[in-house]
Image (cartoon, rainbow, N blue to C red; front, side, top):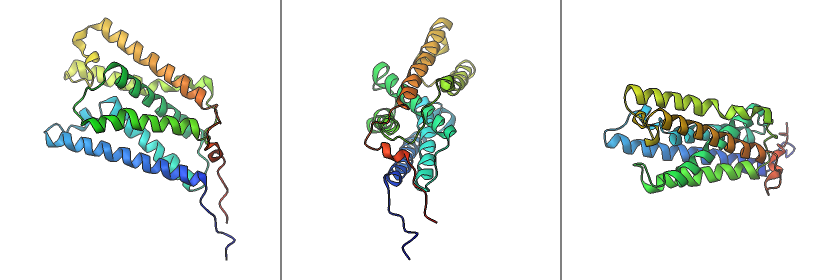
Length: 220
């Protein structure tokens, strides 16, 4: 009668925590979007044109997916670990740019900004460093951190030229091509640096939850 019983493990706790964290972040994004709708500025293209909002949604979906696999007792595939590494690197850039270069900007309530620019990135980075369910990411794949921000920058720059909307002032077309080029190069350089830190972090297995790297087999 009890042969198939399986007690909760650290892997289950980590998986559930990721699901809850992802859902909570999406809830915060939904709340912030609702506030924009209330003031008549509910364009989803504008709201998710912000790198913070877009990346937070992207990372939340990745966390929910990897968390669900952990709860189900399935190993996270290598490609999903790579995607989570990319998302983590992007959130590192979000946190650094907001807290160092443009602190206190934006129209969201302060607590929403704190969640999206401090709390969520910190939780995601700690999850990456302390939970050992990701393989060492190959250095030859470090370039994979660039396509997503390049695509985002391309859309933003085209919108800035065509309809005049940009999410951040340093990307305004009127600042001139030299300023834009320097900021683009700087952002992509920051992405590579953040990616290198995340890739290096994937080689750590010193956290108290490193045992979560071993997904137990489900009893039949």
